[in-house]
Length: 434
Length: 164
Image (tube, rainbow over all chains, first blue to last red; front, side, top):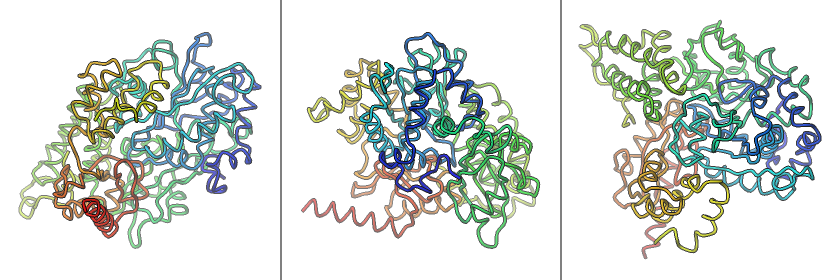
């Protein structure tokens, strides 16, 4: 069953006519006949949680918006830059009107004056297509002045970023939209509060996947939505499976499906003759897990992933088989965070620099066992001391990979028996030019 | 050469119409400037600053912060290859090495014919279709060197024909 990737059943649903023929914009029309607070109540009751990674209940977020402010905004987070994530792109390419409809329902619920869809700059083609879809909805009277005779006016715009992971962080996204450097803000005030949002106005920031669920919830009701998934993780989730599987791609499945089902029944299992070794269930930013029967049978839900020491996050499942040196994988991820650190907070800016430097030394066979302790110390000192979560994200690959796969680090360390035959690890050094 | 040229007027006005402040249009205008100059030249910075009511230093800091604004001239085709973990697990590092060798360039360099600038970039949200790259902001996916050689030679032939 697909709530989001409906193009799998209705291939042309990106077209306005086809979308409308299949019930499109009916949920928005229904919502417009409801009071805004009633819409918020339905979304609250559905237990829809933010799909961008944090899992914060969407309806609760909407209810924080003050009622009497004349100017309010919805910012759609389509920055999708987490390593291993490619779900929002498929939603926007194949089912764009459902995102627009979801964003409009949110805008009605908080009485917003405008919606900005912030897309990462690399979604250049996606944004230009989305502009055409927005124009169609505008022509149909779902966007603009006096929408459907309600007297309410709201416009929808796209905004392209230009290559910065940090702009997926909500306050950095707002800064970037305002034409400032995409760096996180000090909170409080939070975006939903006056003074904390876009141009200082109260703003809801929601992920693409989160909002695309909303039309279905309005059409079918909160109770029907809660029947899908688990008690604490309602609905479906798009799992982006990449790396060492036979069939990488997006799979939309009810939450609570196990890793084993996802990786074997849907993604086709590991490459011929190999077995799985490690999995990053939440892209580069979440803790890695070692593959065994316990972890494979863990349900993919917010609570299920927590139980095995990791997070569901944005559900970008990066799969690594037995051929992967996990120290190499950690160093790859650190290079990503070193590049993407915005430079505002010293622990993250300096921490990622030093983690990368010491990991390079270890990978070149020039490090000692003390260096492994050193990177753990550096990483631990980055946790919980930065304005946004990037500092913590960047510490994760080191802390958890060293903990789960100590042998992969130790084998690179310089020791009397190791150093005899040690050559620089040429393959791992490739493309390490940052 | 200028983004004050008539051909951009409509697009620039459409960008300003989207936002309550002029400053918010700095990113879309930098893209237009890059289209005009081929890179973010000092003139581009100056023109965008004037239009957005900003200091040129502020505009330069924006251009420097984001990777999709090029602060130096580059080839006609800007090939940004993803070598992040998910792509690397599917051979992106080896692909990138071969691509650089074929074009006889280093990371960030431009081929001798001036046509191709190559660099490695971070995750582009196409991990299931690796190896992949973006060429002048358009994605090319499920690549191998045979496809790349064909693409490169096609563009070289086009350029040669254009010269004649």
